Length: 192
Length: 186
Length: 190
Image 1: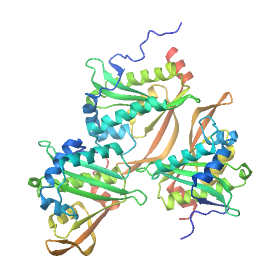
Image 2 (image 1 turned 135 degrees about the vertical axis):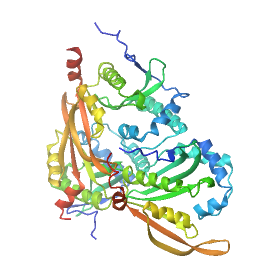
Image 3 (image 1 turned 30 degrees about the horizontal axis):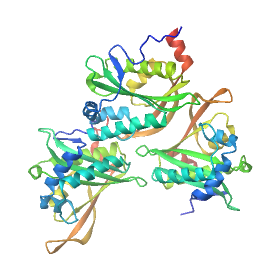
Image 4 (image 1 turned 180 degrees about the horizontal axis):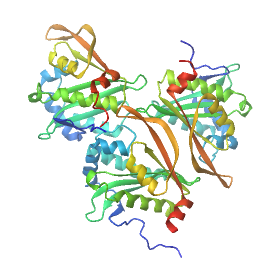
């Protein structure tokens, strides 16, 4: 019988929720002022963003979700007080090939290293594999992001591609690594 | 300084939405070509529709995409197109996309020639630091041409594509600026 | 990696359009500031118009060849200044425009620190090969500040500015990535 009891959007300490246009821009603007976080989260140059700019980005995002149908996007919210703690996305979905790319980040330092990233990644993968029926997932991680590499490796992702010296940050070049995991591999791990 | 848009057999030229639209909608009917080129399902598009989407693309990506048509040097025949998409200016890395629509010109060294021209353009005119490309494992002819031009294998996304009832890997290849300079005696 | 957006006196931020318009409207009244910073004629623009401008910028979105920052003091979070970088992507060069609108912060090291953060951003996040700037010959304070930051004099265009009935030269300065890197020895990888 199908397991429809397990909640797809509820974790132990976090949940996947919608955008709160009133509260979230004020929180997210702070993350964008943290260049260390932004350099982990994005390969584009880090830039501080005002709440007004973030609001506009949210609008563009929801439009893309609706029109392009190749993106699923979630706000990661703490269950205790529903505050925004991160973002999670399944993007660049190619339906006929059954593949997509994962992107997630926990924004503020005090919420990091608490296992929230793990919970979020587990939920994201379950949604991608068991609800969207995707065949494989990829993630693009800079070699200096040790925490992300450890997290994805823990969940069974394998290093598949090393784009040599593709990034230039903080005065030197770094490799950009692509990790991949197949649905069948995920099933073996989780249902074993 | 020499004519950097010219190779031995081909030259790079501009995109004329009208002419290119006609050619491209014809090449779209060649599903083998489309399946080498793209991971999205092959679609047929009218000449008018193709022209319109070309005009939109040309407008939209003006600064980050350097897009050329490929013409044979001897009779100026339109053979295909090639583009550089700079996805990361600060890392100075771009994706190269090549498509030779005229199948009579496959396997004759035209791909290698045009790739040489675009590499020179990328490294000596756009001053990029590296180039990246993706190619499907069922396209060994292209893989050989890219190896010949100096691209190195960087890995593969396993079973990335689903076609003809089975799965195929997508290969990543890359070339660094200093590698290209060494090969070209600079 | 280093903190790109925080120095010892100031932090870099992105301003809400309304607040930005308020600040610009206030600074434009100080024509001495304007004449030190700019070569186009001093003028008065309504706060409403300025706000529309800044809102339109948000609509248009980010381009990879332009980066601008508002500067706030760490002590009491006052919005005192701005700087912007315009990039030539092909040749990998950036032009910087910088200015402290609140005059009580002139001559106190804020400009030096802002330029430090600006160059750090230009050389370790945008990875440009050189940063250029221009200034008026009647702005010796800026010249000293830029020299301290590592810029070298590269030339002058004679008498290209006219103000108060007299003619003045424009000075051109530049700093190369390798020069800046050498100045950093030891700071680069923490």
